[in-house]
Image (cartoon, rainbow, N blue to C red; front, top):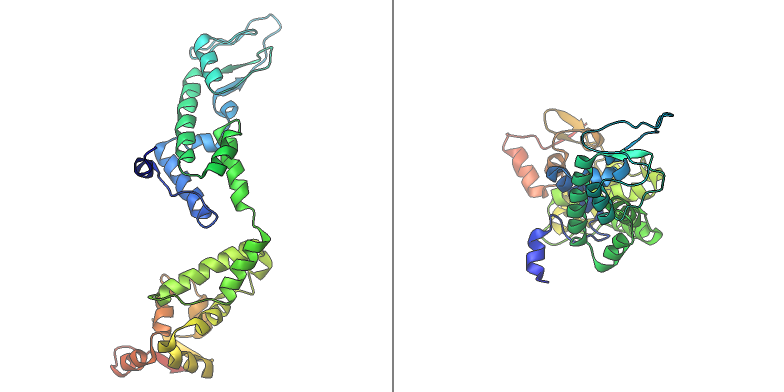
Amino acid sequence: MDTSSLQKKRPVETLTYENWEQWFDLFGDWAKGEGIEFVLRKTVIEYCYTFSVPSISGTTPASSESSISLSVRPLEIQDLLDSMNIQEDKPLLGEWNLTRLERYAKAESKVRYTIMICVDDIDGKLIKDCGSVRTGWRTIWTKYSVIRPATSREEQIKLTNYQWEDNQTIDNAWFDIKTLRRKVVRSNPKLDKAYDDNMLLQFLMPALPEDYAVTVATLDAQPNLTVLDNGILPLPAVLSRKLQKPASFLQILLEPAFDLFKAGASGNRECFSTS
């Protein structure tokens, strides 16, 4: 099959351990946008079936869209059930809504096809072995959401020994550290309070390149250093407050020392102040 044409049909990239959280979020959003997300949340029984019990007199409720029979289903309903590999026990004590059953069958086929072109062969086989798309979705979710001990250790090492990458910015580095923190805390909730913003800053500062050496030394030498942005705030407050643009505060704080003092000398912004 032409891989380029498949790539155009994929609403998301191929599922991996590196992108699985974003993958499930984006695929769910795509399914919602298509109006077919219900097949991931509800079983065919929940969406299309109504349980009922025949009365003592042997009469059954009438329906304009579906029909009850104690022995067989109408042909159009049975064809749909066969295409979805659904086998019913007898006697038949409920009724299928034909309109909703048709919609479910169509939506499930579309979701199955789209998932299959967005996973590798191993995950594709897992989904094929499941009786429904919903079961397959839950199966691969369980596979990827279970945190492996080795992965947990790797993420904690990456966080506590954060490495600066070429052409990286302060904002990007801070975002990376916050993302790593979320993953580490997800695997070990006890670290939630320990890895606050002040601690994350301690992980970031040793990774900064030489251009930031003077700034880092200044911060280390003056723990009560403050930053002015809509008022002078202590360093811990700047990092911990829920502000609209926290990364921009960090950018101001960790700009190369020359730029900081140059900006302060201009009189337009007081970059540093000591309490």
